[in-house]
Image (cartoon, rainbow, N blue to C red; front, side, top):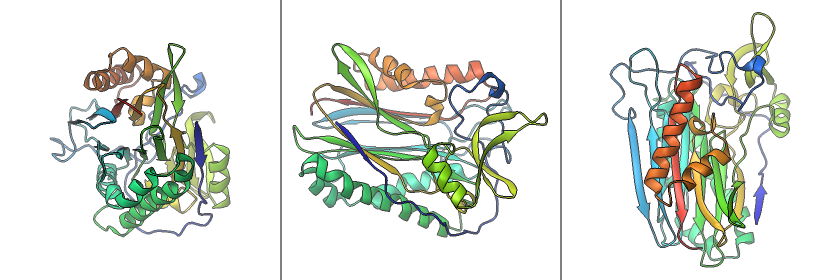
Length: 366
């Protein structure tokens, strides 16, 4: 069983200051028409920050693994590739807690930064969201019937996202005018026989669950990519004074996905409708409030995957499920295979490779 809750969204965002930084285009539409395939990773307002010699706080590979009574997981984040010879700063971040304040609560999150300060934004969000979640309340909600937990959990997760967004606005050390991050967080909670996953999503990172249906694995999407041309997002952006249009080339042809623009400027060109940070985009309706869904676990559910769009850009939900299934329950191997396949697809299609982050969670019992 699955349900969702979309909390009220701001219609008139407050204009926030900050020196404009550079922004890197993120969140391309999957499988665009032939006329839109050229320059799919074209930068709208400049290239992403590349640090010569690498950033010791973010460049390279980050892994984590763990387990509890209910599940076991592996997490892997790899920096992408730039053809200029410099190490690429990994702007992705994640957290993974097998036990979050209680043996029956686990929490996982993936954060895909973009813009010149994207790695700083995703790093701050990674650290701060767990601090803004009430462990005692989550434990208490897990003792209720699953159907009664969605609304209070959605309110708590939404409050956490927006508090961290406000914290970022006030942090003068991080220029978030044209930098931000996606955020997909999954809380696994509840007692035996009544466990569920609460998913909070802002942006185009994604979470899915694979379940058995008469001997074949099928996919349930826990989150939906929040693209600007999605009706609910487009309406909010237009009502806030923004525009939703693709970039247009010199011949008048659209390039890539729909983007968020100021009314009279070719900024910021953000290809998602919700994020944490992105102060300029927030003046025209882009917001940090997540969409929250609930999925009630059953004996049919096999595993859950959270990943940045470095995975989803060229791999479908079904592709990822097949890769994980082929690893015979080995979470570390599954993460490595998903990331390797995504990297291979990027190299085949593009000159650059996006940062790639994946968390695979196998359910031991429900």
